[in-house]
Every structure is written in C-alpha cells, then in structure tokens.
Figure 1: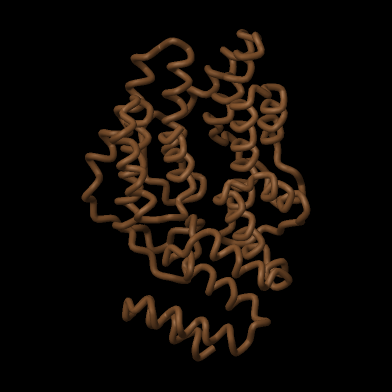
Figure 2: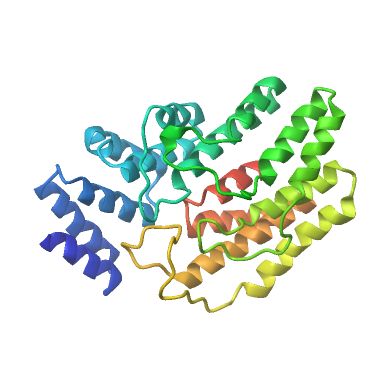
Length: 309
C-alpha cells in the first residue's frame, strides 16, 4: 500500500513518471499475487506509451492473475487487437464470461466489434465477401458472455458501410444501397467524445464514405470538411469536465490531461477529414501526431493503416 500510494503521488502530484513506475514496480515485486496492483502497473505502462508487444509479454508472464480480473483480461484482448492478431482476440472474447463493472461500459463490446470489423476488412481485401458479411452480421447483437447488451440507437456507420461494399461486390445492389443509406444516418456535427456513449468522430467519416458510395460526392465532402473545420476550430481549447461526470471512457487512477486529450481529438478528426478527401500526406501527418500523443488510440491506429494502403 505504501509503495502504491507513493506511485500515485509521484505521478499525480509531482509529475515524476520514472519514480511512479519504480514505486509501483516495487509494490508488485513485494506481492506479485495482487491483481489490483498488476492492473494499475499495466495502466501506468499504458499511460507512458509502452509498446503493445512489451505490455502483452508482461501480462502473459502473469496470465493466471490476468484472468482473475475482467479489466486485465480485456487489456490483454485489446493488445491482441492492437497487434493485428484479431482472430486470437476474437477467440479470447468468446472464451470468457465478462461481468459489468463501473467505468467498463462499452469496453468489452468495443473490442468485440473491432476484431469482427477488422477481420471482415481482411476478408473483403481477399475477395471473401460472404465471410465478411458473416463477420459483420455477428455484431448485430452481442453474445451473452460479454456481459453487456447493445445500446438503443447504437451508431454503426462503419459496419453498414462495409456491409454495403460486400453486397455491391456480390451483385446485390438493392441490399448494398440499403446499407449505404443506413451508414449515412446520425449527426454530422463532430464533438469531443468524453463519455462512452458519445458519438465517435469516425462515424462521420464513414457517413462520408457512404455518401460517396451512393454517388453524392457533395455530401461526402461536406462530412470530411466538417471534421477538418471542427479540428481547426477547437485545436487550442482549454478543456474542463463536469466534476460529477460519470461513465468516463478511461480509468481514473492516473490524472488525465484534458487539453492533451482535446489535442489528440482535434488531430484525429483532421486526419479523418483529410483521409476522406484523399489528402493522404496531410492525413498521415495528423494521424501520426495522434499516435505520438497516444500510441494506444485504436481509431488513430486503424485509420493510419488505411493511409498506408
């Protein structure tokens, strides 16, 4: 407890990250059966930008301890997704019964959707459109073992967009058009996503791609330009959050720099906008900045990969 509290003080009060790491590593060394300390240590490594492979290796040295907590088990799954090992992430998700926990809203289902969509994209690239559709259809409802149902009105612009691509390639144009139209639904006004059920900015990006697939380039470019203008307008905002806010998307052990989060958000939306417009050099520059600010930003990672294809 003493070493853990020292770590929190070093990080949150003194901004001394090296001493924070050393203190928490000491705490875990003194009791390497404490799953809570392991979780906090991994979260600290995550905050400090340790590589996916390094964190996964560390967690799998203590795999029994990892499996004793849903949040740790999910971090392991997330790392498999970040490493592009989507089938392994999918298998781990299927093998575990998760339980709801405060602050965990949307996290398990988010990784479930992510690995299914990314596997579907791989299948699309290989011309396996029926397989891709099957993977995308599995996101229509969530398996009971994930411990969380789908929110009413869940925004699935990306899923419907990729379904539309599959149907079009299979010569089912009526079904394709239906999916593309569903992919255009939702607010077209970008906003910072502080809470787990806030609209993510990439949904607007997929609205734009869907309008393009429907042959309406004007509406497509409107979505992409809104993303860019939003990022430019809010890049230097001074951000605060309601003291009584609940369901924040990240664990609150380590203090969060909200201005840094805003900077990340603005670079992300500008990267998405330029990606949609085909300005790949600018898109790559903004999304590389996202990676520099937070190597664990999955949206940034996925769309940066799209720039490089």
